[in-house]
Each structure stands twice: as structure tokens, then as C-alpha cells.
Length: 138
Image 1 (cartoon, one colour):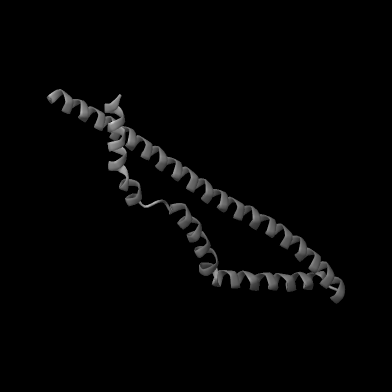
Image 2: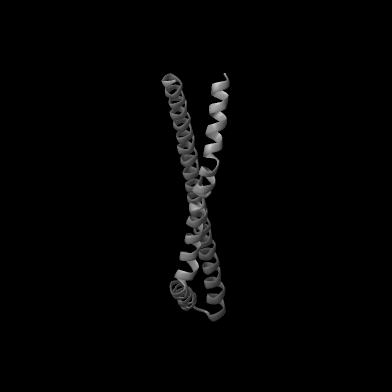
């Protein structure tokens, strides 16, 4: 009888070891997937911002040329466009928390969302019983 109990304990420890190994691998895959999504979103935002800066620089230069030709002084036009850009920068600094902090908080929040542990552990006893029955029947 002692040998049957020892055999059952060996099978149970093997099942638990396999289960924990699978859960660890699943957790690693979720972390990698979450980090990949998060970093790709951050990188895409950086690329978009860089392209936006290039477009704004080209349009600013075009506006400087247009306004400079209209008023007869390119330097005065450059100061006008510089003032518009400075005003836009001040507005962005004032609303940076609402604009940027919430955006990155949402990105990293989505990365952290996983299934609840209670759902994972709920079916553990049933899985162990099925595995033990299959092993003992063979």
C-alpha cells in the first residue's frame, strides 16, 4: 500500500512540476508580448513625432517665405512664425499631463492587463485528477 501512495505522490509532484513549468512559460510569453506591444507603440509615436517635426519645419519655412514676401522682410516673418511656434510650445507644456501622461498610462495599462490568477487556478484540481486517472489507467 505504501508503494501505491508513493507512486501517487511521484505522479502528483510530476504533474505539479509540469503545470508550474507551463504557467511560467505562459507568464514569460505574456510579458514578452506586452513589452513588445508597448515598445512598438512608443517607437511608432516617436517616429510620428519626428515626421511631424519635419513637416512643421518645412511648412514654417514656407510660411516665412510667403509672409516675408508679403511684408517685405524675411527676418520679421521669421520672428512672427517663431512667436507662433513659441505660443504652441507654451500651450503644449501647460497641457502635457493631460496629453502625454494619460496616453502613456493607457499604453502601459494595456501591457499589464492579464487574466486573473483565480481563473487560472480554478481548474487546477480538475486537471490534476484527469491527469492522474490517465496515468493510473495506463
